[in-house]
View 1 (cartoon, rainbow, N blue to C red):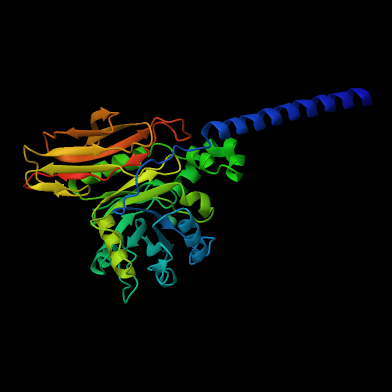
View 2 (tube, rainbow, N blue to C red):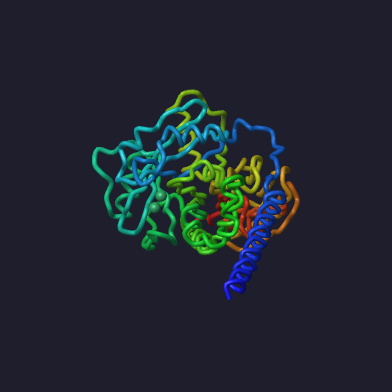
Length: 381
Ligand SMILES: [Zn+2]
Ligand SMILES: [Zn+2]
């Protein structure tokens, strides 16, 4: 009897070992197949700076010291980070605004309001706390020289939609939201976090359909920009490499901190930036602009549609990709060309989604690059 039990146990152990070995081999295969992202071949452009938005530090519910996080960001070659600790506003976090080596540390605050969480950026510290009423808070932030972004509208603390009160942005992909809703997808590849952290993180990302639909809806009547949001509370090193904002500047960033900070905030407020899942492939060099007899229309801009207006799209050479141009949320052009022009015949809100066609851990339907829109409005609106 004892012998039968012992041989049964041995068989069980053998099967377990075989399964573990198979799992180990699968992990190694994933690492070999997907471990190296496509390398960026684009030349460094001083008019394109890259940063990460929405990071919590120990000044609210984040686990990290701000200086340590900033050092990690600088090591990854980022140009700026934006700390957004909770508070109405958070004075300790706001005091972090400075230059740390080559890195610009910007800070705003994630305000808890009656409709959800609202991120306030680029404002001067007000004499009084911001209101807990969303509409009032948005107005106060803008009076203090800043602007607001609706945070994680469909997760954690959800946004309850009311009259649009001039919010300038909406989070479309959020690291924290994806972790909460898609953790099971990343579970099998979790051990890769130790030596190829990009892979389980990329597995978390899925097509943010509700956010995109809501954004398109808002854009019909308002000027609202898309933000990829890190919303990091820990695991800063890996998360800083996941979602990047590429800000396009009219001239290179100056040494002077207040001036450089203003330039980045102005570009974010005016939508002169695009979003990239950088852990999948570096996205330098994407461009989306309009041209007409009246001049150039920057991404984020609003213009009147004239018969000679052309939209131009340029996608990075560094990775195989496919992209689509959308008008009011509906695709009007699909392409694999690296550069292309499009003649818009009707007014509307035009934006671009780029999808990777490389061997990647990023779900093929999740946009690798998301542009901000160009708005062609009717004269009367
Ligand atoms: Zn939040
Ligand atoms: Zn947050």
